Image (tube, rainbow, N blue to C red; front, side, top):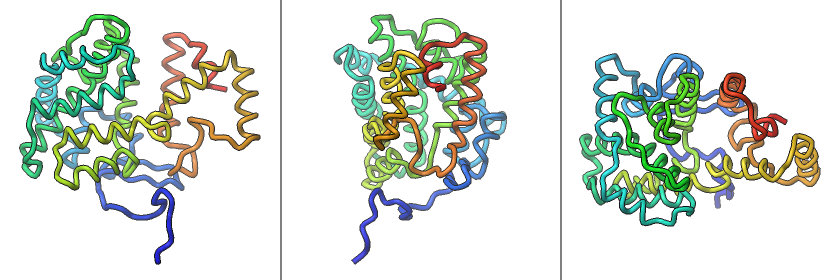
Length: 294
């Protein structure tokens, strides 16, 4: 009888050329390209193209891909009506999961082995998820929905729709980089969930809706929210240090500290910390950021 391995740690579950992680050396690559190079020299749209089709696009391919995304960013009235019927202050991840699933009713994609259906579903999800998230945020703030603009990039569109004003170019560059750094991470929990659902030949909208449910968890994507909640409960830098030292002494889990895969510092953290410092130096700091730095 085989030994039980919690969390399938170290157990190969799939082969993929999409991304690669070396947890001991702190390396993350997409299609053989280090993410540091992609952040420096590519845009989120180019990286999406790379992940989907295996190579960075030339200018003509990028122009076509960008145009296809722009044409699909807006939300159909049926989806808006459904979103408006949801509790205003319910958790946006619950709402987003439901809305992504509902997209499948508008854009049937059952022939999942068709390259045309695969491409269309991928384009639709990449284009509309930022719009849905921005809509849900503004509705929680009791603010009007701002529609996407065809001439803006994914990053600039999202920040504009989210806040209702034109973002600073530094903010756009940093958010674009953040999108790149979170675009893929081999077989993490939400990707594993997506692959299980996809293996049944379910449609792409159901696949991503299921993955969002996994991403929501506090031990996966929801860890970010848990960190913010923890910092919100601490009044100043002194309290942050005292409480975290007490948690370490008690061997309690500290959200946002450590990583299941990386035995050294997460390579994405170096880039994000540098960008955060540049952003707050230009735009001004915040108490939350000062507590986080401790």
